[in-house]
Amino acid sequence: DKLVVGEKAVPAELVPVAAGSEVKFQFLAAGKAVADAEVTVINPDGKSAKVKTDATGHTPAFPAAGRYGLWTKHVVAATGELGGKKYEE
Image (cartoon, rainbow, N blue to C red; front, side, top):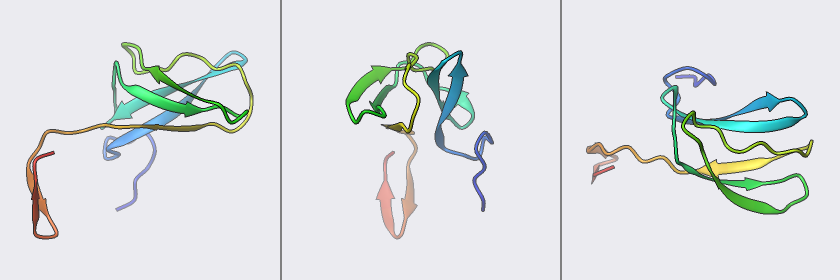
């Protein structure tokens, strides 16, 4: 199956959002905003920072133009089995 940005089938995504001359990133899980998530951001100058998402899943705005790197963690509490191994989340 193909995963398309913005569809509910995508388990988690960080979406850039233009904010004037700045950029924010919104963290979505299954198409819904995730509040109070810790996101690690690598700025275009190579410096990194840890920030939290707000109630609408947005990070603070960043002023610099260029390429950003971001990652976060999202855990779903659901049991199952994959490759013969059971998991809890």
